[in-house]
Every structure is written in structure tokens, then in C-alpha cells.
Image 1 (tube, rainbow, N blue to C red):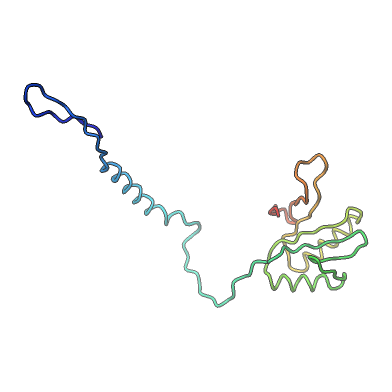
Image 2 (image 1 turned 120 degrees about the vertical axis):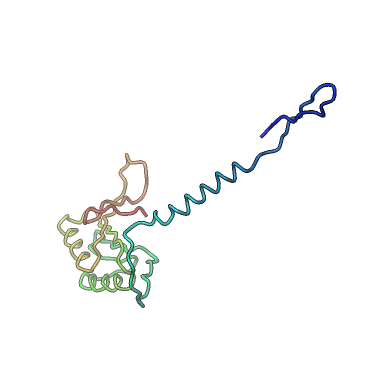
Length: 162
């Protein structure tokens, strides 16, 4: 803060400008802000305070690759890149669900497959334990983004984009 300092008092008083910064108000403001953040930070935690029980259960591992089920025009089923027959689809998906935990299943079906067969496949995916199922499609020529488009899940939940 600048200020005037009177001269030596001789013939004419001379004034000098003090060019030092007064840091005290800035420190006061910063300390007040620090106290405010220290008081409000614990209140920002979401949820009701509860004492959670301790457990020895393993953490759920994140899947390395998304679970994508594909149905080709020749009616061949694939889980990720592995071909499976129709009878082993549900047990195989159930074992993946048990190993990797709950997540999204992305269903890709050829456009020539009848709607009823796709709905039957959706029911089998649901029976395997997965409750969040999304249908993949390609963007039309008028749409800006290229590549697969994720629709809403089977239970009305929007799916994350890949």
C-alpha cells in the first residue's frame, strides 16, 4: 500500500511514496478462507453418516475388456472375440459375471436378424445375471459421429459411451 512519509521538516516538507506491499490483509483473508474450507469440507461428504462393517471380501476387479455379445447374420454368437454356441451362452456369461462383477453388456446384432430373436437373446443375457444391457448400432450417414452408437439400456438406464 502506498503512503506518504513527511520530509525532514527543513525549508519545505518533502514527501516520499512508500511502495511496500502490506501483506497483512491478504494473510487475514487467506486464513479466514482456510478456516471456512476446513469447516465445510467434512460437510461436503455425500450420504448419511453410518459406521460401516469390516469385511474380508475381495475388491471387485474392473473388467479389462467390455463384455460384448455379437450375433452375426449367420446366427453365430460371440462373447468378445470367442465364438460360443447358443446352449453355452448363459453359463459362459454367468461365469464372466461372477469373475468380473456387475457391469454393462453391449449387444451387437446384425440388422438382418429378426426382432424376436434379438429380444430372446436379450432375455438370455438378463438370465445370465447382467441387468445393464445396451444395444449397439452404427451412426447413420446424416449423423456426425462415426462408429458404434450406444442406445439406452434394457432397463431404461443410459449407457456410458465407449
